Image (cartoon, rainbow, N blue to C red):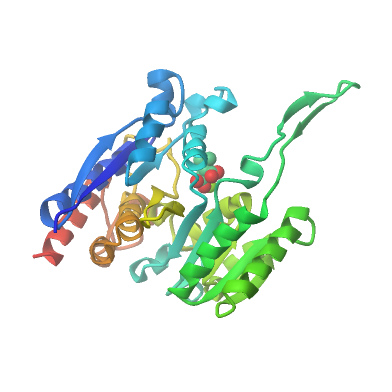
Amino acid sequence: MTANKSLLILPGDGIGPEVMGQVKRVVNWFDRRRSVTFDITEGLVGGAAYDAHGAPLSDETLADAMAADAVLFGSVGGPQYDDAPRELRPEMGLLRLRKEMDLYANLRPAIVFDALVDASTLREEVVRGLDLLIVRESTSGVYFGQPRGVETLPDGRRRAFDTQEYTDDEIRRVAALAFELARQRGNRVTSVEKANVMETGLFWREVVTELHAESYSDVGLEHMYADNCAMQLVRNPKQFDVIVTDNLFGDILSDCAAMLTGSLGMLPSATLGAADESGRRRALYEPVHGSAPDIAGQDKANPIACMLSFAMLLRYSFGMDEDALLVENAVRNVLGTGVRTDDIMSKGAARVSTSVMGDAILRELDKTAA
Ligand code: IPM
Ligand code: MG
């Protein structure tokens, strides 16, 4: 069966283009070797788009993203844009995609590969076998709440403010997805907020508790304050299965969880919207790491997070679980042979460049599908 899938590729800034270069080789491999054909469009986002047409996301690129079956995103940002006005900063390209495509659930798995237990800064017994999933709300909360701004008070002092806000339906839809995903894994959800301090936190807890009682009482549910969750993530991360939390806490906790695995260079993510009648969801896939301007253009970056993001794309957008596993196993096998990019380097391993890591993964794909 041959099905045409449309893919929008947005490499972005910094190490985005070089890691995406390797992922494109993997996409082409699937195009040639498996029962799927990709119609690929490429576009600019972030600083690259700003340099080309003065905005971090053009309306045309947004329209392409809306129309695509899936978007594969690299990374955005760089020090040269530090002085750009806030609404033109590279990050706004990503935030606008999330908001306008209504991609409300950001899935960030943190999985420790056996071959990399040494790469974690935590002791081996704390992280070996770790497999947790953070489901971060990604279209609301303090990232988008109004009003926000900076004002000068009558007495001359200046004041800045943001608004943290959630509606019950925004909490319900992301929590529902977290419960559904938990049913396919360890069947436990930890819902994270600051119900002890914030109105939105208390409300979050109430809404999740209600939804759980109504529709998901078969799934284990625990509530946890965000500060405690940060502590528990480094103390005993294996206690978690699925964590569901708001936009800001999810941003912070997912960086923390990612680092348990040894490197941000390993972590993929998927950001999903609601399913339409045909079951199709708008979706964007991106590595959790940023643009890493300090190593950009040096062929040093780890392409694995972006590769694994493509695996998530195959799984969540196209239901191609077997193909997703091909990518994931190829990565696992390559790591097993001791091939390492700089960020996950350990004693006795072979340090390789971005492109040589790509070569190794493609060779492994050829082998597994031979
Ligand atoms: C992330 C990033 C983004 C965020 C930035 C680039 C806007 O840190 O995806 O975690 O804060 O959401
Ligand atoms: Mg972040």
